[in-house]
Length: 237
Image (cartoon, rainbow, N blue to C red; front, side):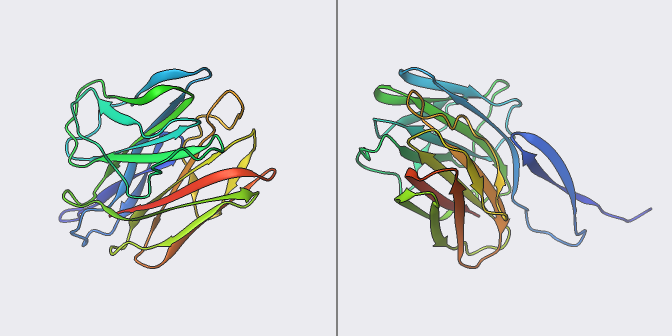
């Protein structure tokens, strides 16, 4: 039909799969959408771990790199396009001692290359689990709105509340635990990538996300048994 404008937002239906949903034709602001994601993990101790996205990210999109380690922090993040990554304020500054650390890094206004590989490097050999995600529609200057990290010893991890100043923000959650467990996320969060949930000789991590509005937001999960855990929740707008 002549004059009909249809806008499309890309969303991820889980573990890197891409789906589409229609947007209102009269909306003029950029919509945040999770475009793609992938993961990798090491079953033995390594100094670095590289992960390659299935497709080259779009120029100026946000790239998120989530990391779980067992013994070492901090880590550094680089990629094949030469982007600079910054860590969120709630990244741990000392090793937890419970064989479970989570860290989050991001590159705003990312440059891109045909084969996009992100590499996480630690200060010494460690078990490394890595998730890389591309997000479209975020603020090019200050995409990180809020973040929080919590820790505990039980079967019910939770973090928050935090709040974005913008509706349709991306709330991104990551969880690590010590032993082998199975994790179920709260019903309003969609599981994104799970590099591994096997403990002992790995660094277990679960990631999940949702699009939420500008009001206090938290995340909760349930593990199959009690365990030492850390959980982080971030808001990108």
